[in-house]
Every structure is written in structure tokens, then in C-alpha cells.
Image (cartoon, rainbow, N blue to C red; front, side, top):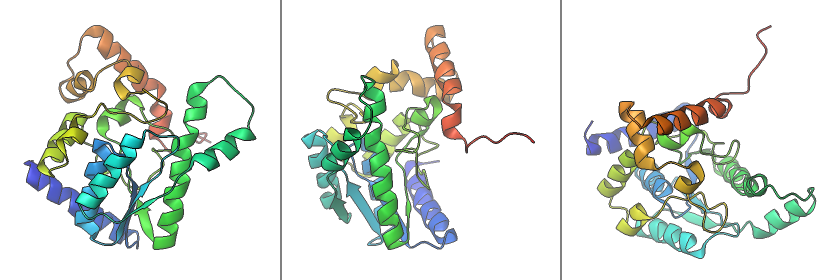
Length: 237
């Protein structure tokens, strides 16, 4: 499928699924990264004014907020900024203290999920997620955080395909080239946390080819994260 055809198909798919749900439009997070920028622009094309981008800093890099605002204003995407710092502080203050950095950091995307569904309910919108096939394959998302969404328009596109779509949509080049990060802590990047590059992951997903150690790592990550891609398991009786 050519890139223009793909873009139009995604816009039509979003409209169809939102209409089927009896909803009016879409709400989505704007993080300042490439995936959220692409989703934001596609939602804008699909729903014009019936879309809302939420910028939800939670002890986040100020540059990410600047990039998110730049995308929203550059493409005419309605947006709202919700600062979650105090909510995060108040919530973590009542929990048992821990040195588990990931457990604490994952509170951030879960607070964002709550915020997205609040505004979805206010506007009769669906929550549109920004996850792509590369992340979904290895479970690189927070369960009931950025994984807690209604629609995943990029869910069948690997990262390199998202970049191609971003170039077609004329997303700013510096945002396309930013090292992908979930923004969970300072200096954190997707690739450093996964232990593999997106190029390696994409190549394996698309062709099945990878060095043995990379293939084994991807297979193990896929197996361990299977529960994240399914509805809660029920006993077979």
C-alpha cells in the first residue's frame, strides 16, 4: 500500500470505528515524540475539531512538552495541558516506599490513562493510542497505562513504517529523528531499556531475520509479555 493510500485508509478506519461506537471523535496523548505526532495529525484529519490532544507532563523533559505544543499548534490540533506532578506526588506518598524504579515510573502512564478516559467521557470521544507493532510485539508498553486505549491506528506498523508515515505527514524532522523514549525517567530511551534497536526489531518482525541472540531476546520478550496483549485470562471451566 502506498503511503498516501495508507494515510487515507487510517483516517477512514478511525472514522468508521468511532462511528460504530456511537462516539463523536478522538482524544489522545501528545508526548512530543514521533508516534504521538503521527496519531495526532491523523486524528485531526479524521475529526477536524472533534479531537483533543492532551499534553500531560509528569516530571517530564520540558523539551518534550515544547515539541508536543509545536506539533499541536503547527497542525491546528486542539490541545490541553494537564500537569500531573502533584497527583503523582500525592499518590506515591501513600504507597510503600520502594527501590523498584520501574514500578514507580509506570504510575505516570497510568495517571495519563485515567486523564485520557476522563476527557473521553466528557466529550463522547474514544481514546486513541500511539503504540506501534514494534512495541506491541515485545510488550514495550505499560499495561493499563499507554496500553489502555480503545483504538491503535499504528498497531500494524513497525517503527520504520511510522517514520515513513511521519515524513509523508510532514512532521518536523527533528521530532522524527529524536531517540524514542517513554519519558519514564531522565535519560531513559526505548532502545536502551529494550536492549535491542528498532532496526533489529523491525527487521525481525518484517522478515524473520536476526542474529540468533537478537531472535532469542525478541522471542523471550514476546512470550513474557503475551498477557499484556490479551484480555484478562479466564479459567476454561
